[in-house]
Structure formats: C-alpha cells, structure tokens
Image 1 (spheres, rainbow, N blue to C red):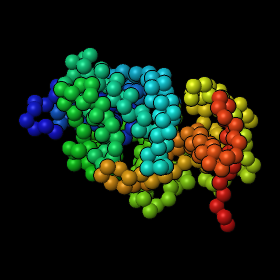
Image 2 (image 1 turned 135 degrees about the vertical axis):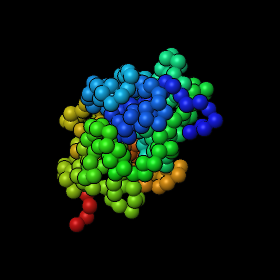
Image 3 (image 1 turned 90 degrees about the vertical axis):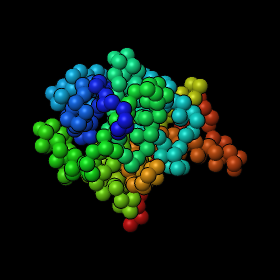
Length: 314
C-alpha cells in the first residue's frame, strides 16, 4: 500500500471466482471503502464464467464484465511463445504465465476507460504472477494505484483465506481437504498449494484433472500428425480425439506434466500440465538430436509425434 497516496475510490479487480479473488471483493470494500469492478478474463478455461459473474455481484462488486480474450491469447501469446521455443528453467513450457499479461492488459484498459484509480489482483506475494500483472499495469496505466492484498493483509495461508470466506459468507469450493489453487486456460492447467508448497513432495495422484499417473498410462503408443503453417498448428490427424486445445486427451492419457519451479522469492513444486506443448517440445528435441546425428526426420509442414507411455520400473 502506498500510504502517502489517497485510497482508490474505484478499483478494477482481476476476478476468477476462486478462493483468493472471492475474498478480495469484501476485503477491498472493508479496508479501502472503494467500489469494486470485477473483470473476468475468458482465456479458454472452460469454467462457468456466468456463475463467476453472478458470484462477483452477490459478494459486493458494483459491476462485473466477462472479457473474451481467447483469440488474442492464442494469436499474440501462445503461438509466438511456441515459435520462440521459450522454456522456463529448461522444463516449464509456460502456460499460466502466458495468460497473465493478456488478462492484465485488458484489465488496465478497462480501468482507464472507466476512470478507475485502482487495479487489484489475487496473486500471492511470493511468486512470479504478481510481477507479470504489475508490469502490464505499469506499462498501460502507470498512474493507477496497484493493490496487492496478499502483500497487505494478515491472511497468511489458504486455511486463513478459507476462514475469512466462511466468516464473510463468501461461497467457495476449497476446503481444508481440497486446498489446491488451480489455474486453467485453453493451453494449460496448474496446481499449487497443499503438499506442493514443499518441493520435496511429489504430487498426490488425486490432484490430477487432465492427466493420469505413469502407472495408469496405456502400454500401447499412439501416433498423431500435426499440420503446421508458418509455425502455427492448423490441424491434427490420428486415432486420438482432440479438443480445442489440440492437446488434453493426448497428453492426459499419456501422463504428461509436473515440474518444480523456482519463483522470484521462494521455491515450490507447482504441478503444470501444458500437455500438447510437452509433446511438441519433445518432438523438437528429437529433431535436434536427429540433425546432430545426421538422421532423417520428417520436416514441417507436417510433424509426427509418437507418444510412448512413461513407465516406472517395478
């Protein structure tokens, strides 16, 4: 909080309807006495955004908006990132991180349009997401005050957040048994919280929503052919059915996912599922190795990915 600046009177909140942003609406009103406008970014998360819209209004937002960011996200963020071969710490193929700037960009644009003097997000004070949101804010709306509740309030854990929600009658899905923080978009699904706060712990199999453990992956491999045009995937052929992400059923069946990430301020073991990206990245590695060994591998515009199940030796 900038204690020398006047408190914002109108704040645009990046709202998802999850635990953190659900309690931020009453917290902002309680601690800043401000009007809260909830902006819900549709980045292909395939969640009930209308329910989130209604929940935002029911828990104190003066208004709410659902912004369709899917095309911009895919066109301006996903494909350029894939073409660049961007990989964080040699492992994380970027999913949540790609969606943050497009959400923050639209949020800042709305703040300027509505004359809001505050921007807020639900990112924790320990990770990289706060940096992604706030750099976008400063680039587009540098004079709008930023409110990051996780750096201000006395809520120290997700258990505290659940207790705050219960006290203020805010409906949430999380419980002390189902405490994971999940972030989903058209390209990716991540999990944080619970035992994942300690990088020494492996993910609990009950956590997975898109994938399965290697032990439960099929013994039979599948071949999928992806057609490319100017570096952008245009179509998929093969036995496996695919959805709009061209990835979930493929990567999920064959146990793709999981890595550990070093954040700016702390290390944890968030579990990531950029499933289609994982398969494509492996294909690129195979091509590089084959080139070094002077072996022939089919070139784009068609690339063939053979997905072989990962097994743990008994």
